[in-house]
Length: 215
Image (cartoon, rainbow, N blue to C red; front, top):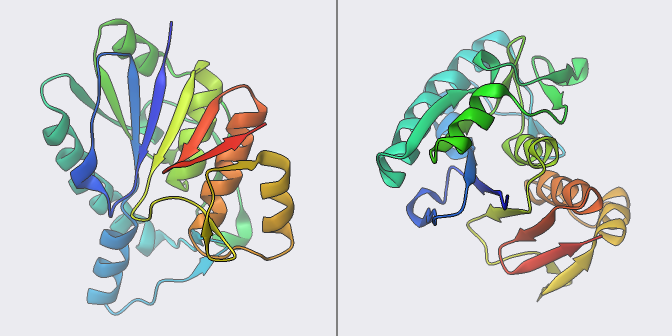
């Protein structure tokens, strides 16, 4: 069975298109979380594109995920089924230096598998058991590997991956990892590239916008 994973950023909610093939949608809420943190007088902190998460921040993360999850489900329509990852057994290893943040582990939770089998579209808020905040790009990649997806697509607010000012049509996964390690990329593209590279190396076709990340 062909299964697609679609990662939707909090800034690209207006461009969700789900076809007839089995699809899992994983969403972020980065802009919404940062905006709410600033409204409450908290300064967002990031390390390599991942949000430092205290218990206070985690509460904001959950609230923001709930709002975005509802918006994504509404955009998809009646086939959409909302899930919070920590409630359906998504697993992650805690990253203590980032606080309540986890590195996701590949898995195939029964509620997601069951929803796909029923012709529904699982819409996943990227929390893991703990609860732990998980970068949505990394969660999407771990799920794609865990459920044996055919393709993972990262929707983003930019056309794709730029290198030296040039929009790349493709990039080798190992080369992408090397460039990240060398500090060529920074910010939110870092977890996207690493997540796409991980998926590609595990047999899942990966695209960041128009940029194919190949094993």
